[in-house]
Picture 1: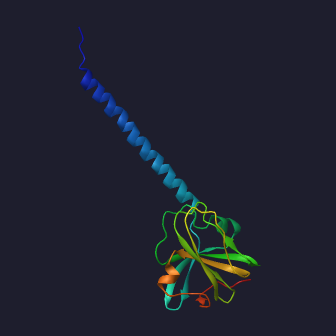
Picture 2: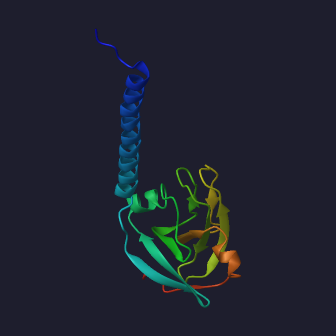
Picture 3: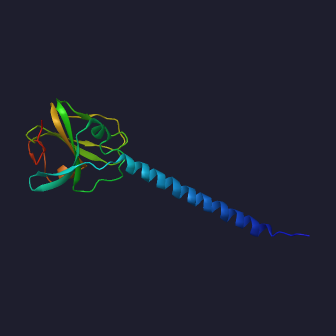
Length: 163
């Protein structure tokens, strides 16, 4: 006669199944992180300056780079940003759909002078637009400009040449 200790057997089965849950979660996390990283192709960077402050800036020049922007990124280092360069001047509008971090955006004239600064909340579809036609927009962590007393009329230096 075979007698099984049902408590011990049940515990062994639970342990076996829980190892698959943990492995499955780890595998899902691995693929999600990989997908997020695959979407973020490194862009060329330049250093921009406003007053005495430097911000290392990724350049989003192509339409697909501008469309992707900072979407899906979990964070942005403090002294980093993204400069959006458009082909021609226009009233440029941005939203935060699929963007996980709060951002501030400065709309810039070709000479680097700041037209206006807007503050944008994550995962919102509100439009944040330039108050006049521009070709440049600089996104940084929300509050970056305010912490440094940077406002409309000030000039961003080190911009790429516009063709």
